[in-house]
Image 1 (cartoon, one colour):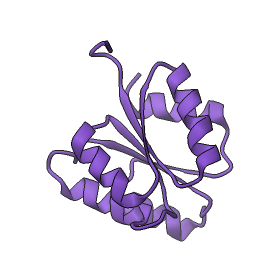
Image 2 (tube, rainbow, N blue to C red):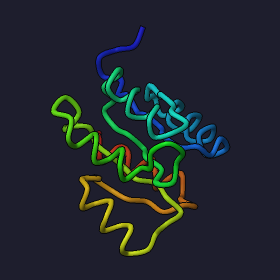
Image 3 (tube, rainbow, N blue to C red):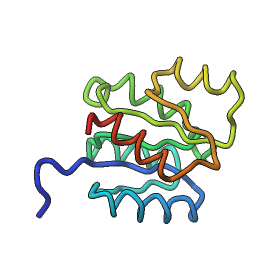
Length: 126
């Protein structure tokens, strides 16, 4: 049984090795971790589970992270969800686009796991 203070984090990424390491890392930090392999699944899980934070990869099958971000922000029930975009695309234009669509923060791959945890905690106000 989880306590009410356990924050839910949805990892939306199609790279299995990244998902496994993030799942382990965030689970060890005490978060309840959900996983989606593509954009459509990410949106469906976000709507069903109402996570506190979504770690969102930009390049995913079926629906990219930018579109998922936009859909989350357009959904009144999910508009308060914090979004951290994770991507190999770190050019200024992608960062601007992600933040412009409503992402709360942006990290480029490869990233430091320590930095990621700091960022996650900051976004969740922990």
